[in-house]
Length: 173
Image 1: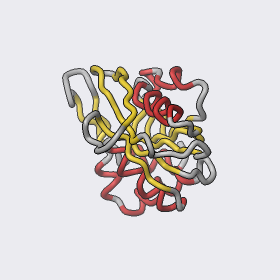
Image 2: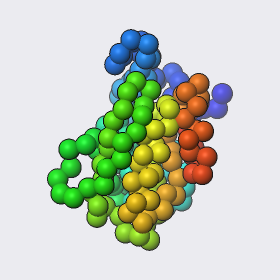
Image 3: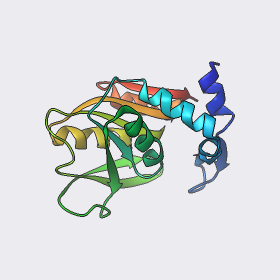
Image 4: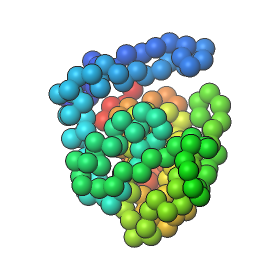
């Protein structure tokens, strides 16, 4: 296991049956509490896809990772939020996740058509959230430069929904 993967593995805690029975939640708060580990993760995410114009963070834990990556790259930060949380006109996308369905939104004016956009989230599970976010970016006319996640849960086969997009996970379990 490489150094970064080991660093992440040793600072992620599994919480069984959260948010509902049968789900094992990947708690990243120990990683975030370790300043050096958090900085190493931000550096690694920032190094993946060149310099995008915007970095998207997916609510909520994706915000924590994407905002410092955007700052590191000198790019804008764009939040993708749960339905009804953004003021002003939005695009919305409904998707399925491992324990239900949800809708996310982005401001209609969040991107310019020439923008290259990096999408960041903490976990890739079934791929529904990442695909919905990529669809939102595309609907604005912008291009998805890549999708970067801290952890990929390979047993949920989320990557299969994203075969037309560059995708990197810092740790695959």
